[in-house]
Image (tube, rainbow, N blue to C red; front, side, top):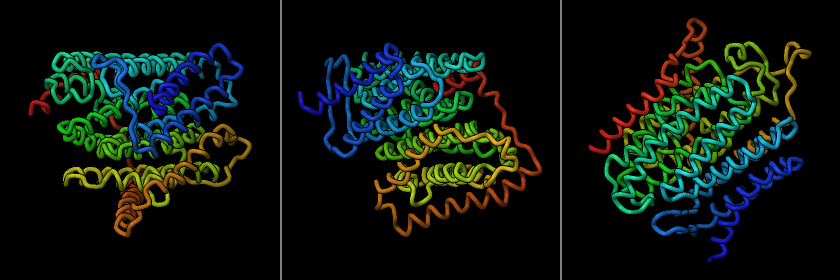
Length: 488
């Protein structure tokens, strides 16, 4: 056993061990949670800068196959940063040891997905994530939170039924659960596995469950879900696309469709948290569109979106119309603008380099769709960036900004600035011009068309497809679509 293999096994064991230990020693729950996040941060950074992948074959061809490389490192680092931010956000709250137990178990399970290279290990990790997410969403014990949590669990379990059948078919055809076996799998196996992953990852119309779930959860939970947890459905698709070349065109189609669908809904959304949730769906498309560069984009998006959800939960209102009539504190506005500018791909922030990498060497039709989605993203971010700010009109009634918000957001914004150095070759005259034009067109549409129409009309997009029974039907339609795609 090599030293790196031993470190990897120790890191996995440590995360899960502490997760189950926290409940026994509640007085140090916050400290143990931070230790877990810092351990993952150190491990993730090590894998990013170490070009030699770690491969573990623990149970021969029956599973468990683990692969840890730089792609895994970026996703693990994202999970570590977002988890640490959530712990710091909740530091001065009355969260119990039960909350931190579920948080750390969820953190470890998410990390497990990012190192899986076989379908059976992935299944176990995704199922543990479903249970942990259910418990952490339902933590407030209100009727609303319990229903949202149950809705998530039902959708997740249904998706995993499709996935399980697909995984069994893969094993039947190749006598292996490894991702590479997908190249020998029957078409129905690919369709079944992907309908499960598309739903878990909130991709395209299979992700219609996501806006309600992410917007109705508590603020730190929303940040955790959109920042890192949702990427557990995207990562296996990216890994499969890199492993099996035949899968890449299908992933590319869903990437462009997801980017356009999410940003289209976000443009017309007037609820800040729902708008951010739709934006998350759109940004997942950018994560998938270039599998080789998915890790860096996942990092920049996860950090920025965790910041945006944390800030949105501390604004005077969730309604954008009301926020446009209310001044928010300037420090909060600055933090909000930095995170939004990074998502829009503004130079000097990590989102710029990530977007340039994602949009490199795309097919012609992909480039058109992705650039349209990028302009739409700039418009969506403009709705936050151009909110009025300054001293509130009634200081006595103004809601004080929680210290936990700054403890969580300031380090995340620092990462967006520092991570800008990960891809300095992006700073060419052509790329700077391209980014400026994309953002400029988005802002121009916002001021010239969107603002004038918003004053005259109220746009309410239908939510019928977000209802539980329709979500199950959408999965069936996606399965039909996938069968058609793989048979072609």
